[in-house]
Amino acid sequence: MNRTNYTIDARNKVKRVPDRGHYDQETVYAILDAGFLCHTSFSIEGQPFIIPTLYGREGNTLYIHGANTSRMIQHLDKGVDMALAVTHVDGMVLARSAFHHSMNYRSVVVFGTAKRVRDEEKEHALFILSEQLLKGRWEEARKPYAKELKATTVLAVEIEQASAKIRTGGPKDEQADYDLDIWAGVVPLHLGCLPPVADELLKAGVEIPASVLALKK
Amino acid sequence: MNRTNYTIDARNKVKRVPDRGHYDQETVYAILDAGFLCHTSFSIEGQPFIIPTLYGREGNTLYIHGANTSRMIQHLDKGVDMALAVTHVDGMVLARSAFHHSMNYRSVVVFGTAKRVRDEEKEHALFILSEQLLKGRWEEARKPYAKELKATTVLAVEIEQASAKIRTGGPKDEQADYDLDIWAGVVPLHLGCLPPVADELLKAGVEIPASVLALKK
Image (cartoon, rainbow over all chains, first blue to last red):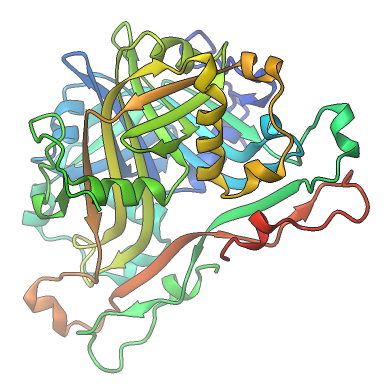
């Protein structure tokens, strides 16, 4: 695995609880690979915007996509500065004191600029996005027509700088509070799947595919 | 319920798939109330930032908090423009064609500026934040000491403008694709709780509290 570190400076340095900060690609990539939804942050004429969107990682590049008419796509396509975050909520940390309540989480903030993916690389980038959402699904589905590819813009964000922030473990209380008759611990949280619901118009006899069967509950 | 609409203009108008856009407080509040984690977007000297953080809603106000030394808190405390998003991922929408794959989701984007909560209102705002994370927990926990309140800054973001975007339901495929032998449907997703894990140092005999017992799996 790649232990390369991203450059650390004021932009990506984890200021609060610096022990929770990580700057190596292995840690950053692992958090990115565990998700599929990010939020993008960008500014138009000084006004901050934020948009949730899907992403896919390949090497040090994140792909995002949207309709050609999307504001986010049209703006980021100009190569402006942007930030992007992926956050996994892993648990509620319930301390004895209200003050020491916390969350367990794994988050990454990425800084970079977007570049438009060229036509001949677009289908590959969409494959990466699709695999990130549901591995194996691309091969099962009808591939895009030329006009569908044309209606979609894919942007590649090279990760210039990133930081990861991770909290794990139980609550940390003030020494005197450990004697209180107050329950403390962690309620683990996770994004889980429920059983798949077939489309009403599903053709008779078509079975649940391997990509869906492989999902963990 | 309040059917008041937020003003709609270029800043908050849902451009892509406008049918999925909603601007009424009832819809916006319901999505905000179903979560506890938001991402804030703001810009420092032209550089966009994005930070995941907890929030609590009271009326048309969102509270966020952090240590006095937090960059996000220090910057937003200046009353600069910010945006904030809350996104619930409700399902993977698997169409027959790769192109028509989608997500079911409920998201809100809020625009506003932050104001520092005055000392005498801080504890109440923290109560709102705590209730948003886990209803009833505040009453069970040891209340903040004055020095703990002093170390925390709470900001109030009055919701100036907002938009909600919602997708529900199954895949929509091209007419010709309904005959394909490809499975289509929805894999519902949800943020679920696992059984609570007591702190190793939990005092003997202290039982799991009502706030945790009330959580849905």
